[in-house]
Image (cartoon, rainbow, N blue to C red; front, side):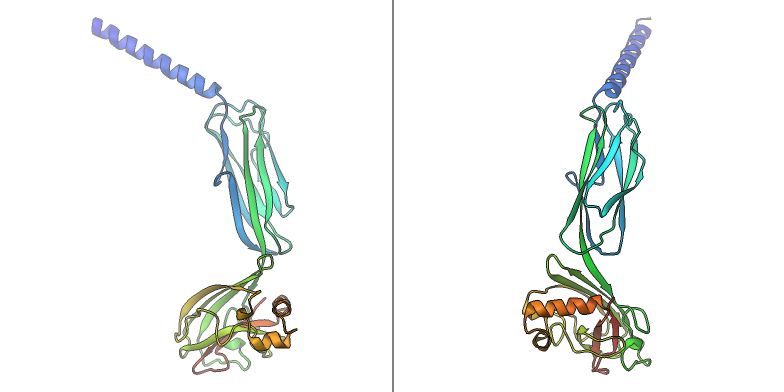
Length: 287
């Protein structure tokens, strides 16, 4: 009898404790936070002008009831916008969540852009915010004029006997005055001897070399396949072919302006030269 009494008392105590905990937890202050977020911030990184990127943020309440409908706002650069809001008007209860989707669509290159996403309830504790950033840049991709990517068919004259292929992307940060070149290449007929950007001519015409000669800094020469990525300081004379600088204003600043204008006009191409095709085995105009 005593044993049964002890069991009953223990069960009652446990029940009371659980009820108290549940009431206390649900009735305590709310604690809402956005994710993903690193120390209250999220960075879209570099994004090409004319391109878009989106991110869905999850707002979670790990505390008590928010007790009033939330309101979500986004302030800052107009390149950021809310495309879906599942949180405004929601009374976010304990252990509940909702989502907000932000789109980043830069319209002009330049300095980093910022915005602040805020979710606000009636209680002071029912507030969450995340600082959002993104950097608008110019992105040029090798494509044509006769075949996508880097191709022997884009050479002038074309080299249909070669089965080489590749890709090239050039990212230009006008704020930092940097140019990042990314290249993949495969199945060249013979080891490559040089790779660089030529400017400025309308496809399919040929143009002189604009960037560092004889080849990109650190490019994996003497191979038939490989990958490459390098960021150039476009305020450094070493990033250019001296002849290009001399023929385009004779200053680094004028050479930078000329090369960027050529890229924007689709009059620059990335060329990979090989032992068999000294004038270039495959190329792609950047646009």
